[in-house]
Image 1 (cartoon, rainbow, N blue to C red):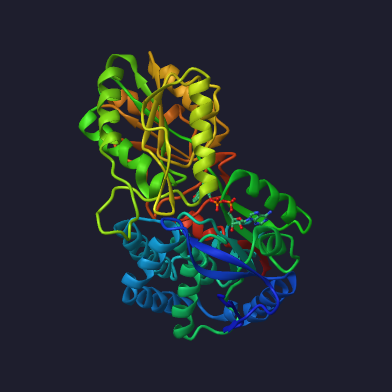
Image 2 (cartoon, rainbow, N blue to C red):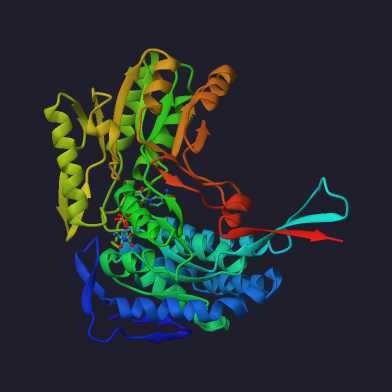
Length: 475
Ligand code: NAD
């Protein structure tokens, strides 16, 4: 059973219920984690609280040294780390390697901010007065993670939190704890002061809720689904704890008559199968203009039919791995069945396939889904693409915006006026023009509507882990 990492030591959670961790491509048990009781959560938060004042007194540059050291250890172990990610998630090997590389790059990028976090001097209307705004750490951050990019998300939370003087307690997803354990083992070799970085394993109910409702936590940084985000807000409200929420998406892709389909088809195809269709950012519904709808549909169907799937650690190369678990595959298959029952036409795929102990959804394309149907409105998180035909850009924009989600969106067109109108009128945290949906670390990844509160990455994401203090000086 994996141990927790608390106060600079790996400690077993004595007597905790073990939770099995499965390889989703094989259905085999990789390891177990403890469902750590609340007393263990308290212990980790206490350790982080004790460590914070000393860590907070270091300069940003001194803290940046540790981030760079961790990044180097990750690079030294890229192959083994990425193997863990593939084993736990069924993520393709190249994507897993890319996730490890991005994680190391992200920590280095955050370290570069050390000399760039600035306060402000504000003018006063009173003679002899100087007004300063300075930034302070939040204190102790609770990081609660999902399973789809679990390794990168450790750094996306710990990087800015630690650089700005916070300490952190991380709860990895119960589906994918091994990569977090690996991260802790490498970090343990980097001589961080004990208690600065802690990991507690367990379920959302015991450990997750234990963190978000704890009065010793100053900020909860959560990535996951909307229903859990709502629960976390409620739990954090009891202590008026700051929340930063990166939640689900239902990204629209608009394809206009003048689109270059040699760009749009591969971009939308990869968007739908990347990480086995389990990416919050990626296009989940297409609005295609009528004049190009037949050609677009035929080409996308063909591209999706050609997608191969199977165990990413098997002998043959594949384009796509399994769903994270059987429950996810059953939910997606149920959504497809409902959609067809409501009158949608299945153009390819649609089946839940059990193979070698893994659960797969055939790459699927549907058409004729109503705007108010679940297929258009709910996050599917699998390799399924509904195509909805529209007449005009205004209709596409209105239907794209008609969603409780507001994370990302995209448009494919050669017209500058279409691009300008769309970026002005689409209400999503990100809009991608003539390219697949993938953000950059110097951007600001933030969702509108139910897709979240606050954001991650870049200067703006970094500053979320600070709070301001005003100082009024009279000479
Ligand atoms: P999830 O909400 O089921 O779980 C996320 C984490 O929350 C897990 O660690 C879980 O144990 C914990 N949790 C569950 N209940 C809790 C509770 N009551 N209190 C505190 N913690 C609790 O999400 P998931 O299935 O792991 O991940 C998939 C979701 O994450 C999708 O909706 C996806 O869109 C979203 N996601 C969003 C982004 C983004 O940047 N916006 C990135 C990745 C994933």
